[in-house]
Length: 213
Image (cartoon, rainbow, N blue to C red):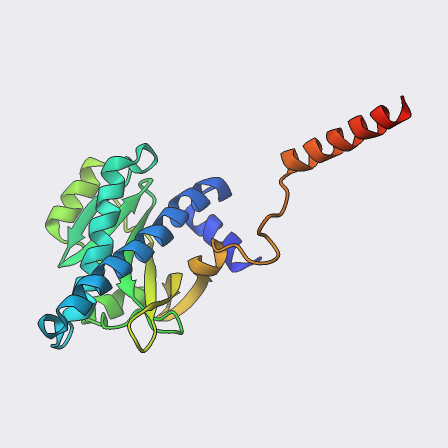
């Protein structure tokens, strides 16, 4: 079973719904990083202290994703919830999505608080009272699995990759590159769909019939 299908099973999503959600996530991260870098480059001194760029980049990504939630009918069921200073997005009432910066090995970086370490080690997830109240109102009475989607930057600060990751017992269990998954390559670009192939066959048949007259 490939990592993609492991994610489909764990997320309880059809392949169509997975593609719709995470293609949007990929686009949001690309736009968020681009917008943030544009502002950082105009005034680099403002962001020339520890953690400033990472915070601004992540805020830019989450701001755009929240806008998409309000604008897209397909994302209206997504809910933004905050717990202990961490932003989560509740998807279909079945899992939590969290945006974070990652390193090239798809590990969440600059986020190893004690609470986070306990969470990825399989310990009890500690939600804030407000988050517990929101989940309770939705009929969710047990901890939800948390998945992280993150952007990887190169040495110049440009976007290099986008990962979807989940942890188990303190280690990465599954990882997939959303950038590779949703970026056409030489093997997929201009590849005819089933409908297009049917049209090509029909045209060829008509051409042969015309030639026989």
